[in-house]
Length: 322
Image (cartoon, rainbow, N blue to C red):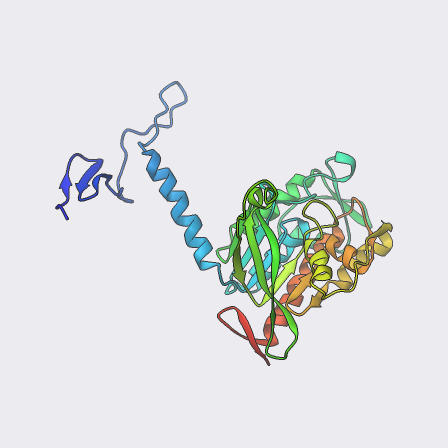
């Protein structure tokens, strides 16, 4: 191989030709200027540096999270609340969130009928206090001035946690289902693909997926829709559930406590939360009130910890019970 030759302060030459010189993290750029009178100047950059910065981190993350401690499917209000509570309670856990949409947040960017205020029944307002979201107290319930204030705050808190990774624009196409040490069928991870690939299987030749192995999956994909109630429907087609209960009509007073109190491990290794549970169990919908989603997310985190405390895990696989 030819020796490395310095060409200038930006490039070096080796046996593979002219290459970008790695930048020094300690370098200073005296020519940058934050001047808004027409003299704003950025530090120099090469297009390849941008590509490599993204590729390196993204695929290192995929490599690392091929084995996770908990995978949360769906980054709506229930899934994000679960991630926050789980990650803050157990900062040692690798928590991976898979979200099919480009924009996470599910239906929590608005209230009802595209209006902006968000209504949350007590005692779920305590979670708002925990994440510092202001609200107006109306007695039995509170009102956040814009649903996006809740969702953006929660999202930023979750993503700032070092043990949480989110892969959005990524769909769960299937569940990994193994026969476990006790001979029962157990959900042992998720099968993933980029959402644009998942939506185009009928237009292209076979495009195989990827996998993430984990001892616990929390599914919070919402009620039936293009990507909704995915795990509930897959349990039926996989023979682990006879039939869907199907979501019942709107009743706020019945729905929210039913969703929170019944958030649980619906199949070995699979915890179901939020509106997806209404499709699984045949519970009422609650419409534009979000306390049930918060409570269900927190309950799902408790259930995940209960499962993790009850099993021995090796390389992401449950090998025995405790």
